[in-house]
Image (cartoon, rainbow, N blue to C red):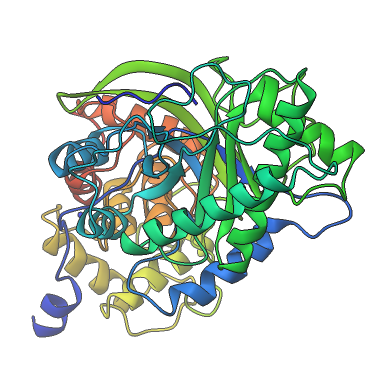
Length: 478
């Protein structure tokens, strides 16, 4: 990691309440860790998810960062609430790295970092990456930074580097104390920032690896997940080489955070990190170093990161109306049948299901346009201000598919609201052909930005209250 800077009739009224409601959102951090998975050991994505689920039942704060694939940023000084809120609503980030512990961190004074700040970000959807910058490798020339911080003891002793190991355990104790004081619960990942060093210096390298081994072992004893951030060319490469050549010599971190500023937003680092290491679900990559970014008129100096942690961003499976498919190749016009014309049964079943869920249709989902079906969708059309007709249009599809709560969504979001977004975007523009899986990935981001451009909204890739309102109105272009 770079040197930290201080820097959306009675039954109808009840059922449709909440249409076009407001939204909320999230952001990422600097540093970098992913979980350790080898052929011999189970994926730590599964282990840490189980630990997280247990911990989450004991507190109001969720485990962080949890399962997530998406973008994040890190900055040494925790930003003010106003800045966090603005970036949540306007930036692509959903995770943020914060320095919570360590005598060698530049941002020892953290005026914004309180239990209330942590709880507020977690409640609003941010994924937090708590970072410690304590003792550094003995051959790291920029440390110690102050009079009271120290380097990792490089003395080999009897060859076990016991002093370094004990220092790692002690730093884990201090970090957990600081994390708990801020409301960061067991099951969360705590990241150790080990700045780059000279890997050719044997005692420096080996003592650093033993320090990290002590850090990881103690975090496991205390119920936390271990993450390590370091340079691709030193700390990460040394960890990966040891993982392969000396798998029993150290206790390896569950997750790694790779600092490689190649500008590529993924979690790979060819030449330094083997592709199978810490996969699945154990990697973060800091792909761009310190730079200013401005979102919503607020500028922050950040590092940029891409995360793929735990199970990644996932959405629970859904079953609607006993298994009626709602993900259609096209959401076309539906008209009353005639002697020579019939409506596509699959589309009619989907429409009947959606109207049934709104308590507007009480018939069976038989795929036939009957009087009850027409009566139900005419009521919907009237409610949302569309032309009341015996025909059902693409605009009508959009409004019905988008209806529901209106949370802020962006790359990395997952769940029922993302499915509604994906279906409504497919109805708005059949050429999208988005997979409806409930996970906001690059394809959804691209389709959303195209839609925002067509309706003359800012192509932010963030689903705000205005975006939900446009979808619920069935707006195709302005």
